[in-house]
Length: 132
Image (cartoon, rainbow, N blue to C red; front, side, top):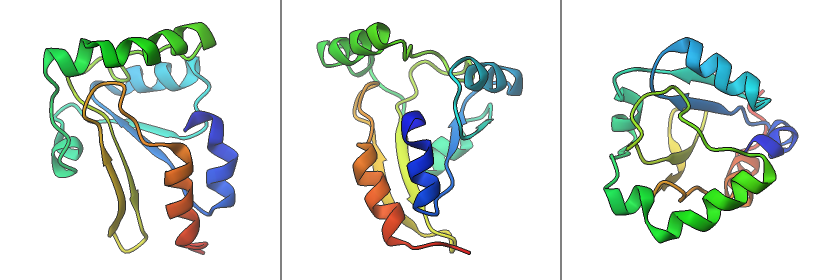
């Protein structure tokens, strides 16, 4: 998502990363990785729970399906890290929510490396039109 920042703006979409933990961790995470989006944290998992994101099992977090994506990120310098130093078992999710609060796209990760395809998210965001 980070590398497609301009494309989200062109689609009329705003992006917010929601992590777990303390605000200073979010600021450091986003600054170190040059994230062009808003980064917020919440310590109680309330947003994650509201969107139906669950905590993963050991296999979902550390299994073989995660090794190749993890290695690719290490080689390309896109190191994965604890966003807010919160719950390392929290599985990821990606959602497109329209200006009326309706979820138009939902991807709930089945393992720690299971993230939505940027092209899928952009297609939905672009279909909603410019909110202004």
